[in-house]
Structures are given as structure tokens and as C-alpha cells.
Image (cartoon, rainbow, N blue to C red):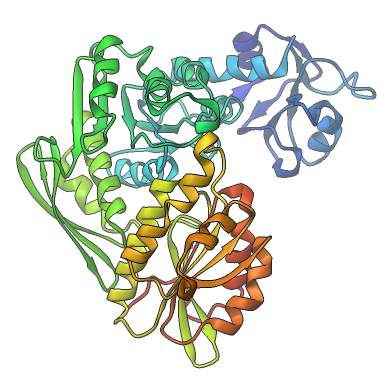
Length: 475
């Protein structure tokens, strides 16, 4: 593995003081539980924890050194870099790594679909060169500098996911990431608890353009109602090049046709006037839109469109974001759509449409169910946004809806009695109801905000999986 940091480069980056013997690190880590041999451990202090209490444990696990704000007791001779503030020290590592890399950098933000877009970009860009991308969904004020600190200097491309739930957070992150291409997936009514209106959310996302030069590219969703607002913001920040994607006829990267297939979907698109046809191992029109964002970003980097499209053929659903698994039920197999990672009204509606597609491509043999948990951080309209899902549920002709959580009870109460499959206060209480209800050929959507813990239900259901689980559904 490539050496990322040495005692001398870490001291140069942070202005810290070296203690102990010299060292060379292969990776940077902030969680002592995940430390591997060769790591540089950074002792972050948070509201409910202090990494300094785990420095000794990290060194015992093989960390070559630690970046600390003070010397923990008993470690007076240990290999350390001592700084005033460990988080600012991590940011200093991130800034030096960003300065030293030759990589073309793509930043991704948006109300939904950030991680999915980042992973699809990782796959596509890997076809063109050595690519580095955000680990997991580490996209906040700690995760972003951590990922930057691990950026190899010889990467050709790098993709960073940037998240926020308050104004100013993207601004802080983009000053470190300094993207050449900034992509915004979409703007929706999420985190409304912290914003006065959706335009304020758009403004917060537009902070991604703040440090871009006139040579940078903004990749924007032409179908989104906030497109004009975001495009104006990009221009206001000096971004000269805007590339659009969507089904809108004015889109630079336009969706011409989407079709669900037995093992994914087929997409026809016009990329800056050139027709492309390609496939994905993922079901749902939103995946086609994500592929257009990916093609738009790669095109902005001057990469070959056809090569990018070929690379997309191996893209499949991610855990918790639409992965389809088969589980054993009394008279056969049922399909579970594990979309339990997070939820918003827009994401719920996309998931309802996907459930319909999966049911159709599976031969319409069984029934369609949804198990839904609370949607969080929606602000003063929380209750109406939950009850407002009812028309879409009826539109897609679900056979029953299981609900969990105090907020979803309001949806349960407005559904027609024939659709109320069961309400419980907590996600895991749905498990026995689902085990009793599901039959062979049925399709079940599992979705809710992370705090609703619907992911625990999805995990419990996945433990019932058959030998074919993990493979995409086939007919």
C-alpha cells in the first residue's frame, strides 16, 4: 500500500509538535474500533466522546501514531503529533492532501440520492482512471476531512459526497473539497425543520459553488422545480459552465426512454445530442436519472460518453437503497425492496413507483405491500407530508400498508380501511405481522428515515433470505 502520511508531512501540514519515534502511515482513522495496522489515529473530541481516551487502544491495535490535542496519561513517549485542536488538525491534513493531488474532483450534494450518485460516479470514473471516493456516507464536517486526508496523491479522479441539514455546512465542506465539477442531485423538502422554505434549502445546497472558478462545471437537474434558482446561484458564484440532466427536452443529457427489465433496466438517452443506449442492474426510473447525472459529470471532465455508459452496465442497487432480496415464505419466495436507509416524501413516491415496476417485472404473481416508518426532519408540515402519501399509495394500487411510528400513525388513519395492514409503535414489531402475511410472489417495500430504525426490520427480514438472495430478481 502507498504511504499517505509521515511524521514530517503531518507536522508540516498541521504545524504540530512531533513526539516519539518517526513513522509512516497508510491510512487515517478516527474510530479506534476500526483501526488497522499502519493507521494514523486522530483523537477527535465530540459532544459525547473524546478520542483521547482511546489513543492507547488505537496504538495497541497497530496505529503507527496519533494526532492529539494533548498527551494522554501514560503516553509521554508514544509517537504523537500534538496540535491545538484535533479536528482542525484533521482539516489541515485534508487541505494538504487536496493541494497535493492531481485528481479531478467531483463534489456531490442534493436532498436525496447523494450516496447513490457518488457510488455510480465511482464506478464510471474507475473505467477512465484511478478513482477515489467518499467512504460510506461520511459526508459531514468530520467525515469529509477524514476522506480528504485519505486521498492518494496519484488518484486520477476523486468523488466527494457532501451533506448538510443547516445553512453554512456545505460552505465549510466545499472550501476543503474544491470541486472541479459540482453536481446537485435534486432539491426537495427535506430538513424543513431547519429551513424556512425550499428556496432556503436550494441556497444552502448552492454553497457547493462558492470556491469554484469560471472553468468549473455545475451539473444540475433540469426537471427539478428549483432548477432556475440553482442555475442563477451557480452563475452568481462565477460558474460559467452548467450541464443539465433530466427528461426535460432542454436537458443536455436527456432521458429519452426508460424501461424496466427482468434484471434491471434499459435506458436510452441523448448526451449532448449523441444517442446512447445502455443498461443498469438496478430497477427504478430514479436510477436512470442518476445515470444521467453520472454521464453529465463525466462529460464535463472530457471523458468518453460511450465508455462511461458501458461501465454503468455493472451498476447494481446498494444496501438500504433499493437492494432487492428474496426471502423464504410458507409457499415460496417473496421479494423485499430494502430501501430502509432514509426517507423523504419525494423518495417515498419514487420507492412506490419502483415497487410497482418490480412487481410487474416479477410477473404480477403476488401482492404489493409497503412497510413504512417515520419520515424525520420535515418541520412544521410533518403531519401533512405523512398523510399526503395516501393518494400515491392508492395510485399504485398497493394491497396493504404496514406502518410503524407515531408520525406514520397519521398516514395509517387516513388510508382506506382495506389498505391498513397493521400499525405498530416500533419498526421491529412489524416483523411477526409480515411473517404471517407474506406469501409467495409478494413484493414488500421497506422504507423510513434512519431514525425510524426500519433498517433493523429489513435486516431481520434479510435473515430469512433464500439461496438466491443478494442476486437481482429475475423472471
